[in-house]
Structure formats: C-alpha cells, structure tokens
Length: 176
Image: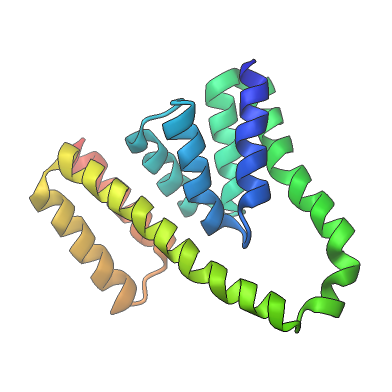
C-alpha cells in the first residue's frame, strides 16, 4: 500500500504541477506533510533547502529522497517513476502541438493566470516555513537569517544556493 501511496502522491503532484519545480513544491508538501504525514513541515523544509542547494531539477531530488525515506530503494524508484514519466509522456504526446498553440491567446492567458497562483502557493509555503523556524529557533535568529538572506539576495545578488548553504551552516553552528 505504501508504494501505491508514493506513486499516487508524486504522480498527482507532478501531473498537476504546471510550470515545473516551483508549482510542484506546494503540491508535494500537501501530500507528503499534510495528507500522508511522512515528514513534518520542518523536515520537508530541510529537504527542500538541501535540494535547492544541489544541481538538477528539484522534483526529482525531492522524489528520490522522500521515496527512499518512506520505503527504501523501491520507494525511491516508484517516486522517481511517478515524477518523471507523467511529464515525459505529456511532452512527447503534446510536443507536436507546441508550435501550433504557443501564441494562442488562450494559452497565453492560461500562463498569465497560473503565475499569480504559483506565487501565492509559494508565499503560503514560505510563511509556513517561517512560522516553523520561528517556533524552533526564536524570533531573533529567524529575523536575522531572513534579513541577512534578503540583503545577500537582493543587494549583493548572491546565488540562492550559496545563501541556502550559508544559512544551513549558520544553523548547524549556532542553532545546532
């Protein structure tokens, strides 16, 4: 039953996650944390942070790690299958229609409608992570990390992966 749950959780998240990695993250969080309770929000946030610091698509990294944690090697394989195959099949089947409809007003409108929805989902996820960090680390540490990260990203244009690694290092050394 667990392998079927893994298959379903990752299949649904990836088939509904229009637009790649960012839209998939809140959907995966809903399945992994809320529905099946395979991880806490804190654990999911840690896996997400580590996954974002590493190269390659985030969905496959999350799928592989979570599948392995839940059901070992079979879970890893099922999660990767459910992550990769739906998108690959859809791309192969729909590729010939790409050039026909890419400038269609309906497709352009759909893309414009999806963007704010993804932004809201990512904002909710960020707020949930912030509240979890606040509860476990305190307001001073959380505010300090958020402020320094914002300055590093916006003013100094530091790569997000480096900011994540530095924040993880700070957490391990100071909060550990």
